[in-house]
Length: 67
Image (cartoon, rainbow, N blue to C red; front, side, top):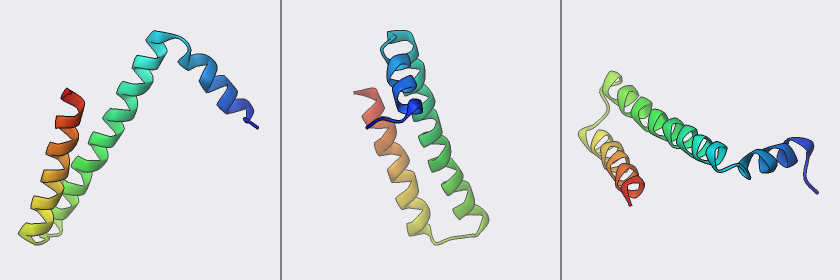
């Protein structure tokens, strides 16, 4: 059974314009979180491998968006 919020969200996502805005906002949040994790690793002077792993994750995410 869906909650009222879930019903409302599904109703909004029936509109193609809102669906695109929702998708873009979700992807922007994901990118912001990845970038913040890289910033945090740099500030904490994490190992090169940790920073490289996070940058690789960012590159893969960007590549998946371009498909």
